Image (cartoon, rainbow, N blue to C red):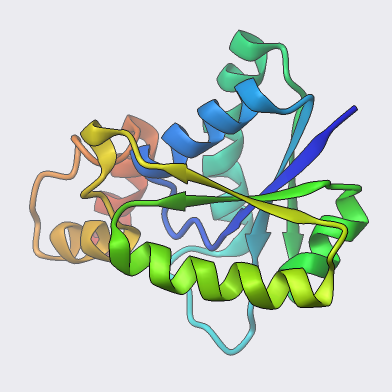
Length: 164
């Protein structure tokens, strides 16, 4: 059974993340979605809220693809989370060349730390290539329509968060 790990902060989960999760679930026998919980980083949503938003996204994908998808949190190195999950690969989504430059460097570092774990790059689908969590948060904070960028349950959470 080939397991892959897909990591991120998922603050919030976007249609770009959904695209990568769906495609990775078709490629691997098991997918672990690892949400980074870094105490030095201030997230908009709590870890519990982000896990709940992810759960609502991954459960239908797991049912559609027949691939088990697990959600875990981690606060250390991605390679350590990948090892703990029994992953043979770390999946990374690429939107553009800027992402590629950064992710290629990270893949090199991860490869040096864990040569037994490969990095697999998935180019973003054209429909979601422009979507970034940071931009979604900015649009939501300014009262803009984010429905094209995030699932409906996430849009509701964002609207509620910024109405506080």
